[in-house]
Image (cartoon, rainbow, N blue to C red; front, top):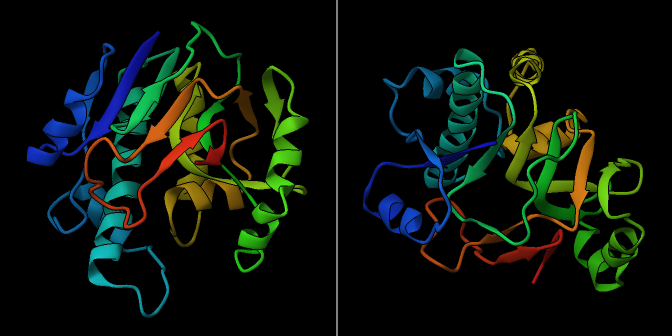
Length: 222
């Protein structure tokens, strides 16, 4: 099994990678403001965010999306099987050598199935906990009628051909939004693993994109 970590090649990226205590291959992330980057150019031509989105937000979303495309292309071009695609704030909790024969989410956050306006109340009422408490140990089918996920911090890809298929489906989309939200909206990820083998730990060092850092463990922000 191989691990690919997406991380910007700057001072902050180095600091974030210093917290990683596992072996990994570094995939250099894309700066969303770098219009000469072909991945940034591709995403910029299709990105559609809120009309009042700030330039820093747009650059962050574009850079994140472009970086994910670059990493998926790297998997395909090098025909890498059994790989986990990670962000540089992903920390292992309890790892395994295999997570099944389908693409599988290994870390993220459970949200209201269709309304961001209702999400805060939904979580306050413990609806996310009800969902999670019904997960079985191991691979679970994602039920998009009951919840959706965000934060694609760790993704298991068993076959490079699956990464190729995922890329094709992404690139068929007429517009791009946040990478994780696009994948959830299009239901492109069908499985998640429980308990989550990785946690999202944005407090270890300043996030390069997020303005509300936090820790996500077992699909809940704590």
